[in-house]
Length: 231
Image (cartoon, rainbow, N blue to C red):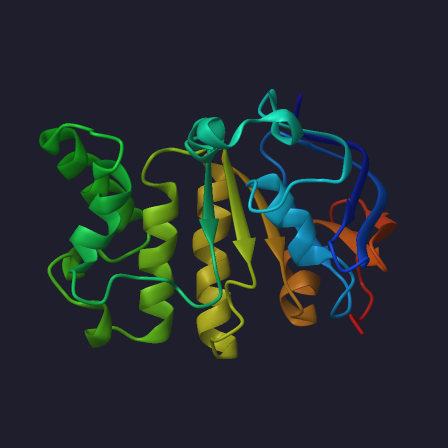
């Protein structure tokens, strides 16, 4: 059953640049999908449209049954509750502890404190940081900070996790540790879409791979068939 449906999607910015051309894409529940391609191919625009950071110029985008293209700005929070986003630069609150960073994602929805406590400790355990709940981000390594960011993104049990170059600032060993965490999350049923330039990760993970070029899907590799180099 599909979680994401994109039909004839076009995105043209105000300066005239067309970032996405007539894109059609379907991603099923529970999939782990890499989106790859050279700089400027439209990867970031594609995922920004999924969490409504950008709106398509034309076409249809549905995420979990929500018509993202037609969603009013005041209703975007409904979509955001269904997904989590992990960025390259962590975006943590550095004056708050690990626990407080993750809890904040639930506090903004007014969830009771006892429920927050249970959920935060559960996801920190999942990413291997339960023992550092009272630690501050500045006391953590880059890989640990990204684990906190992942925990924050999944603490509300999203159906979809969008990862924008989550290993971009990390060394090779740490990057593969993060991928192990993401794979465990995927095994629990969360659909994952990850943008990356890291060919080694893509080759090793053997997942479905979407190759973009000039805003178009030029190749859709089935799970385990991608063996090419990213330019």
